[in-house]
Length: 220
Image: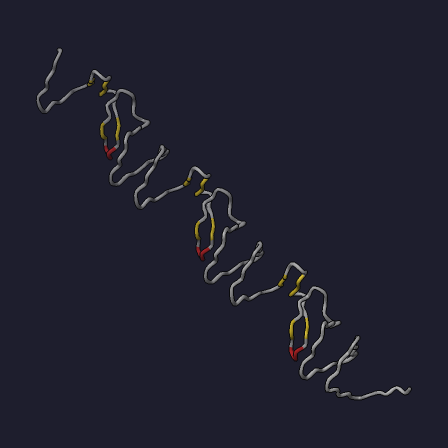
């Protein structure tokens, strides 16, 4: 037999039972139907895509290990993104509309601190506002614009200023003394004096007493 070198070979329809090796360029102008395709300049685990001129290429920036799709660089999702497992964002995740999540972990927040929104919508916390599960602690000033209801005890270590009215079942003022009769001093402060006492049966006044109306005395 004699070998023939063809410059060009035009085949209208061709069926290959085994393998066909093309050492240069194979151009298919209509459609190629193949059970599998091996492109030798592609790399394992990289996801192929179509480049300029319709060439199938890949990139180290887009890989799939069989369980994980990895994108190095930016990724744009034009519709919904559903994640059945965990989503770990090592940089910044920007959500322009709304995020719906069953739970949220922000790694730069601290346990027991109450989160709040800072400038730019960032969720932050502060050591000055904490909640232990039973106690809300505020270090600094707190402004209550409506009613404040306390079912237990309220302990004020500084000064409590009430601009309207306080309604309480009982009141304990720690700088008052037993048996002394309290009265209002300058600035509305409740004070007492050793010169005015009451021992459940005797009202004792040390000093002068001015009585502007009648004084009735029994058992003198």
